[in-house]
Length: 344
Ligand SMILES: *[C@@H]1O[C@H](CO)[C@@H](O)[C@H](O)[C@H]1NC(C)=O
Image 1 (cartoon, rainbow, N blue to C red):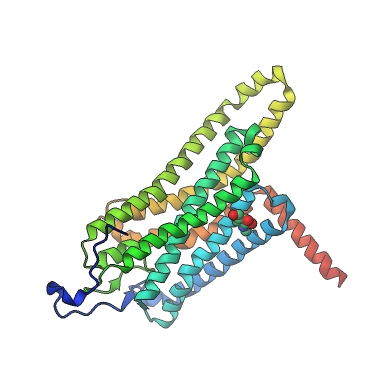
Image 2: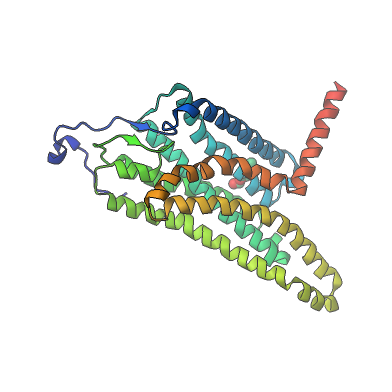
């Protein structure tokens, strides 16, 4: 909060003479494509419905099925719940603006949207790193997994991700609220995001950019590196399996078999996690950390659609359609419901 220079009385600023502070913003969104408004509305509406339905289904399965009360599925349930909230901070307002063609958003509305959107992104970064750490322990340390990833730890890790996400976003939002906006109020984006807002403020952008960059580094690059390290270790371990099982056979066939089975099970969940992490971090890094050349700036909106709209949609698909235990839980739930219907 401290590094941001505040100008609480913009009217006093001699350079901005007769300008009044901005009370609302205009979110251009997809306004540059006037012919496609209805089509875009329908596509995004379908995406929104599918995203919420898929994620809520996973949350319901994880909460109700006793077999899914393990760390990995508690994290997955939290991730699905997070994705539901995440799309709900973006898509409803986007749909409304596509339908009504009213592109204005009040200053406080914009800040509120950024606060929730930022919280969700930061929480997702933290939760994905926690999940990588969980997979790392499960694969690289299968024998000690149960004791290390105990109930207390995984509840703390999940709770900590949410707290950290909201805290971080709260700090940034507070800083933005101290900025002065006096020039143009047009945001060429479909949501109130940090960089466009900084670009619009007439304060010295450098301090805000340093703050944003530092937070990006903490919340994006560190979890990304953590994830990468987990995967390097995971791959190294898997490459070692044949020789180590051969070696361990001499000692105890049983324990080595247990290791292989545990690992194979853990690995099948890993590959889904890897796909999710790569798309999420890949697009985030492109949008936030790469230099803003003209062509990248134009592509920004497209990449943003990836991590804001498509990641929440595909996450339930890649996690659950490829996951035996989730499928089993789903089948059980369907069978239970149909037999209940038959009884009545
Ligand atoms: C999310 O994590 C918390 C622990 O902090 C847990 O109690 C809760 O059940 C999880 N939510 C879901 C939907 O799995």
